[in-house]
Length: 105
Image 1 (tube, rainbow, N blue to C red):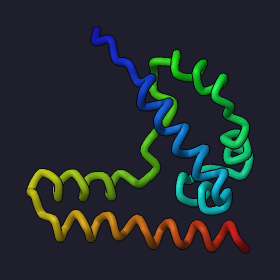
Image 2 (image 1 turned 120 degrees about the vertical axis):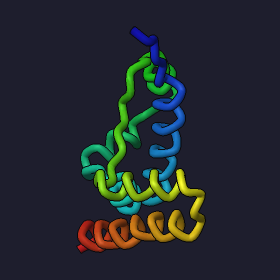
Image 3 (image 1 turned 180 degrees about the vertical axis):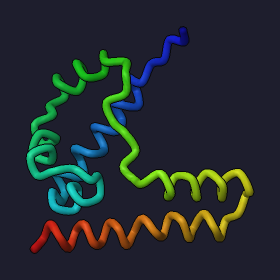
Image 4 (image 1 turned 60 degrees about the horizontal axis):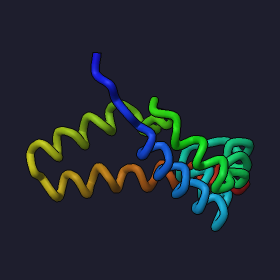
């Protein structure tokens, strides 16, 4: 069995997510696809806690877009189609905007 280590990915993701939550909790929740409670937990991640999290080597985060979105992105990346890549990435923005509008109301 392969020995996979996601500790660096976990740490880098959580630092960026925490920083986003500090700047704008509503945007962070919508952008990351997480609840208000999870956004609040991100705000509690101190450097000491992040150091402890960095010791966890299995993945703590997961992709939050639908499978169809990821499939289109992979096909566009494989085909080296910059226009298609931009279009697929652009489809994430309306979903983000809708989620943000829903959370703000």
